[in-house]
Image 1: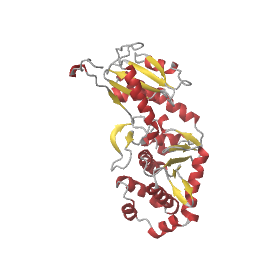
Image 2: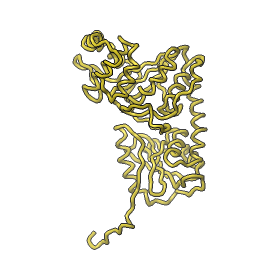
Image 3: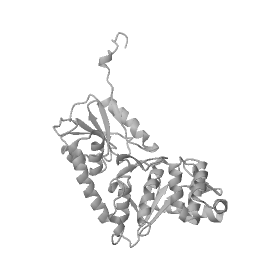
Image 4: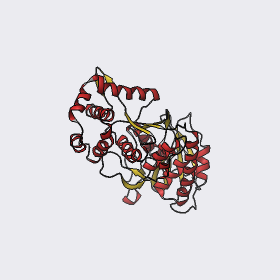
Length: 352
């Protein structure tokens, strides 16, 4: 208003919002976060100080849709860390999400599971008690998920992706070492998401991705001994598809025949799309184990060790290979020369 004094530099407030990696469909959540932060940053009611080791935590806003705003579990979890929970109903929210107010920072917290709750707080604040409880909760969650899984003598893992999705690439990167270890005792298959319209394959990120999906499907079906080595090259070489085909020895004539013959490539692709529709797949990546939806986050996130454990939990009798430890680092997303950047799993369930 006219006559108001301008804020002095020292009076200005800067709030840092730390956001985990999320898919495009989660952008509305981020907009909501900005709104709630603007309303609540000076809010004191319901927040309590804590004397836990590590970073001091000040309070959690539980942002939720009106039909799903029960804070009972979250209150129990947060009580272990010594801070309160304030519910905030948001009609546009699709799922509950936590906002942890910590000094001049706001952390986005996973409130869907106990292990995810403690893990996200541990990762963002390095609070020692949260880190300790994350490990215990994660172990319990993995045990329960493993018990509930359908068992087969030779389990079948179907991972649905699209070839240019950063998170689909992340899952394919994970599956390379998992397949190398378990390929003889489990059927591990990458399937692709898309559709066929007017005799042409389509995909969520356009024609270039659709054609790469088709290429990978053809290699998988007709040159299976080259499939995993091609994938590994494709991810490391920044998606240089033609160069990788030459490097790994793809039969170019056989590949072209498959991609141009609707009774080959499109037929194989349609089988993938039908399977995806059967399981209700909507995002890349989506995991199906022994015909039922499965989550790598029940076992520690997007790491080779977590996915290995998931597959082994689908076995009637655990194979000796399951005792071999794989990387517990979160796999890199998108194209990258290395498996990981040396970071533990963030627990982010982002999809395309």
